[in-house]
Amino acid sequence: MSNFPQRPHAVIYDTDPGVDDAMALYYALAHPEIELLGVTTTFGNVTVDQAATNALYLLALAGRADIAVTRGVAAPLVKHAEAPPAHIHGADGLGNLPQRQPFDNRLDPRSSAQFIVDMARARPGEITLVPVGPLGNLALALDMEPRLPQLLRAVVLMGGAVLEPGNVSPVAEANIWNDPHAADKVFCAGFDLTMVGLDVTHQVILPVSLFADMAAHHQHPAMHTLHHAVDFYAGFYSGLYPHVAEIHGCFGHDVLAFVALTDPHLFEYESGAVRVAVDGLGQGQTMLRRKSISYPQSGWEGPASRACMQVQAQACKDLIKSTLMRDWIRP
Ligand code: BDR
Ligand code: CA
Image 1 (cartoon, rainbow, N blue to C red):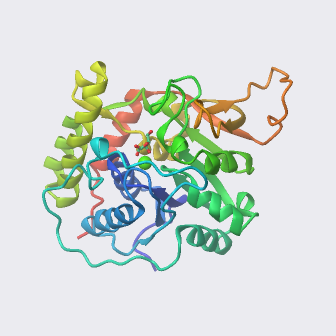
Image 2 (cartoon, rainbow, N blue to C red; image 1 turned 90 degrees about the vertical axis):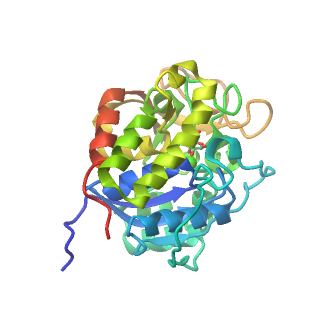
Image 3 (cartoon, rainbow, N blue to C red; image 1 turned 45 degrees about the horizontal axis):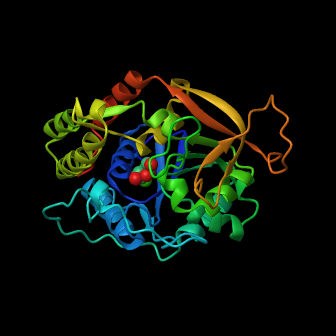
């Protein structure tokens, strides 16, 4: 018998770590209601090889080398790949760590898409996918298994923006812009889908001091690593947004997807079909159909998604803190 009680949210985490991805990974490991079944990686904040290395490393540091890690797509489905944003996440994706400890966990040989399909078929209706990078792995998984929207319990993704301006163009959020064709396919597929976009992630500013406190509390390499990475990442955001600089903080982006999974009552939602602009100056824009208006164009008849529009920011911060302060790191 397992020493760990049954957890209500069985999750596959699809990620491009990335500093806020690392924060979200540790939140998922620390949260008592999340069972992390695997980490599927993609290009995005770093190359896919670096993303996979970082996922293995972060898990090993936290004593969770038992969790499967896969390597996924290396480039967008259609458009050319952009250079990774080393100025935001560091060239290594974790704020340019001065050194790394040795680790010996290895990749699961399956592709990320294959892993998602295998797990969904093995546990139909049970698994929630939490993607927080470009959506190519999920788009490929859909090609491999068209019943995926029925086989997965839900998708809770970080990406997009409805009313909030974009962060890579006036209208596009980075994850969607990095692979707009994949994103449009995912939004049209019929998943039970929650979109946690910039409308809410820009409302939750996490001070570096929060991570300093956590590192001091745990006195463990996993949290020292996270603190280092967040400090670097906050340098970028503080340079860009004066109100973030005031508290030397950053946006938690990806961790908010897990908060929306565990504590959906902290958010307000708007539902409607979401479509993604795949080219032109608006490339990567996520457009939400308002139900009350009858539009003359075709293309809006697809399934509805749930977009997070408002969030109780202080409650989120308190939850992130209390979760990561738990005794969750394994020896
Ligand atoms: C998203 O882009 C990446 O830089 C972050 O990890 C997050 O997933 C925010 O736009
Ligand atoms: Ca990410």
